[in-house]
Length: 478
Image (cartoon, rainbow, N blue to C red):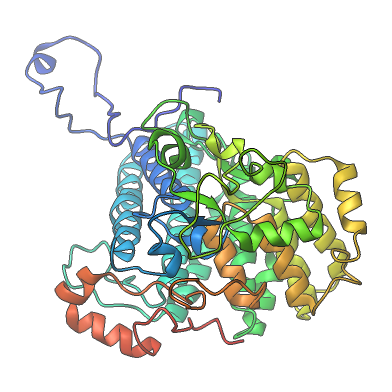
């Protein structure tokens, strides 16, 4: 990174003057009155990426639910128990309080700036647009996990917020995204590099990310509203991430508390709670996937990749573990990448939402993933020549082909993988061993909402068809 990156909470503040005068002597410098919007934004982005990246079962279960990992001794979360550790409360709290509220504050303090020079006015406008894009990203995540959520009443100070209809939220997010994209001016600056761990303030990269979010939203609703989906997809098609060099990766640091939380979960904890799940290990073994050694270690004292039975108690000593990359404190969190964009495009073409050849984008997505994880072009060519991988000969319809390869490529990105699995109903995952349950379709609402906001909770639960893990969200119709 070009500058020292500021990742700690609301710790960086600006002072009005460096001149030592009477006013300075009577100012409590431990409690400054001016807050830097850039540092608040940096904290919000950090907290969002920590929540996305976590493997810790107290924070995020979606890497388990996507069956990239399973557990050893404590297996509740692999069997879809949300209540013992109150996972929905954690997701809700982090995204509303630590991310969206901070983004609201960052917007407020950025708007209070009074730039004079034209380039500073432009940078302010770009920062406001980026803050808005991150807010849209955060609400999209919440509604994709829960369904109806507080939106209009959110962050207004009310203790009893109403829940908005998820489809209505999605429509409004789409409108907001168009406005934010239009406000981005690539000729200007935005955040100082040290505050933007995603793109170091590069506005052109932020615009690609925003268009990528638009493509993702179009694909998400493609089965329930193909007309709107087609419009979103067409608008975004030529403007999204188009190479691995443009991938949106949030960069963590080497020292706590600013390391990747997976490093904390796997290394700093000193625990042996996770092993590779047999679901993905068996699939990658059968396909001869070159990424298997990039994702996982061989099982101890063997040259084989072995996965534990999903949802069962598993021995740490006989199964494969997370690979070396995930044990690196600076391993970045991928928010969006080229492979993801290519799989969306392949799916859009198969659904008749855009013209083109789905196979080309399918091949691009696989190749991009292999290269991004450290494989070679030769690895990708060999893999794509496998009849079980090649688009024309692989088993199943387009949903199975794209869904399986997207799932493999989305390794370590639990929420994106889970979205893809729910939308395409592919690949077929294993039944959780101890609970005998299928993969859930959503998080149930937090218990705090049930007890403290009961009337609005009951209304929301009724509107979506019941506050159950098995309740499909509005866009999940197939």
